[in-house]
Length: 191
Ligand SMILES: [Zn+2]
Image (cartoon, rainbow, N blue to C red):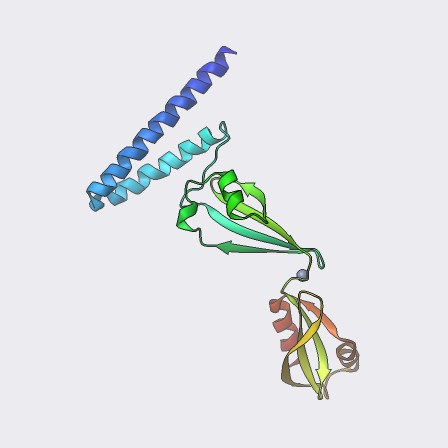
């Protein structure tokens, strides 16, 4: 029990000290930009100290270094797409509740000082589905939209005349492809 109190006190002292150093650093920064190099080091130390403190407190706040990730889960294909976005400046110092208010239709999936992940489910296909089919004797690229409809995107110059029989059969049935990278690879194979 006593041990607990001592540890809590130490953590509290470190926390207060780091706040003090933080204010002091800001003051230095305003006064003299030449100090910037030593300033950065000071701030790194502060953030590592803060990490320890945060494990013991509930209010984690966003810092200018927090990564913001928008995670969309597409229920029609079970794919998840993560978008790493630039952190809007006005988000700095916001806590979890305040971020929730910024994204009313999203769930908070992860909220740490280093990374905030917000999650949304979409009843749709993701943006990474393609089908290769034959059109006018060439291989054509169809893109699958969010409803699952195949929309013609491009007719390539690749003729189907010289394709091996199995490939020809596959193309006639439609080759389903996931991801732009895989699409390009497949097209290269046919070229
Ligand atoms: Zn998908």
